[in-house]
Image (tube, rainbow, N blue to C red; front, top):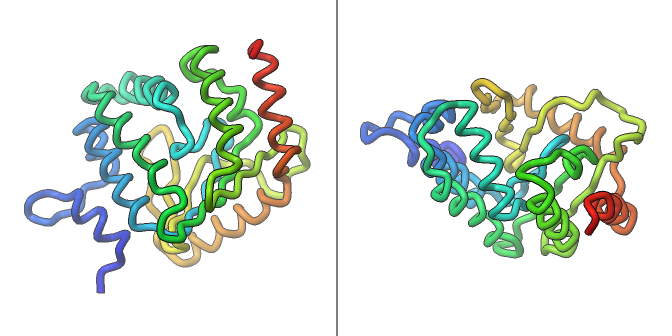
Length: 215
């Protein structure tokens, strides 16, 4: 039996049914790769995400997505179908509260400070993060920059139904399905959770960054 997550990549494959890698999809543009990732998110019921330096994709505002994808396109020198990418990425937010999906998300405090798109974009994005604490099925924590860590910070990653890990790198971003690798990322996520703050303590960090922007 084919795993639902594997079906996603098959649907994103060539007419002959050969799955394409994320790197190959990047070469086709932001629309195709964001649509393929949207399919993956739709097939997933339980996700865990760690984003130390940027806001998690499903919580990004359209302006933030637009600025982020522009940076990606400029770096990778791929087709500039930015708006198609914005549409597909922001569509992930429509899944909150549906079909019992749960999202455990950790942001590094640096993600609140990393200037993507300028002050106006960041102001709107941080206001949206404040609202996101109330989203159904979302558990949002922030790892303070001065918090004692129980594991080294590492790169952004997502765990999908405990069966697949997506790691975000400058070069080709690997997809991990080996059980031992998945256990390592599950362990890392659990250790990072120990350093995170939640609720009002987390909101206070967001408000502090808004104040720094003059909001």
